[in-house]
Length: 164
Image (tube, rainbow, N blue to C red; front, side, top):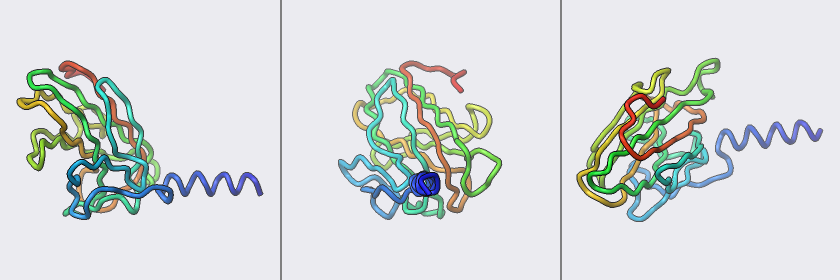
């Protein structure tokens, strides 16, 4: 019985039954919001830093029907940053990892995006900001539809084109 309850709790967490999103339904970050979606992703992330999250039912639905988690990342003009998003086990496509897609926004303007530059369905953005201040890193999946699963985000100072 105890094992069953633990397994049910793990599944509920993986599917995101324990968190609420502070992002708008349009898929854009609400002003000043640091979001934590149902899947447990989103919020502020430091440089250097690491965060774990999951895309799950209840997260923000983007205009193409995919799910997304937004992270706030403070950047300094002229100082390059490297961001790698690694997909973990896919819930919706068993036996494969989540095909993650990363988008970096300054306000509502997309300044960088990536799909597979870090290899094995993982995304890598190397970016030198032209303006200082908060930017939004949106973690989603490549293509349309509600693909679900775990992922990790890692950030470094400097341009690291080989980061995986």
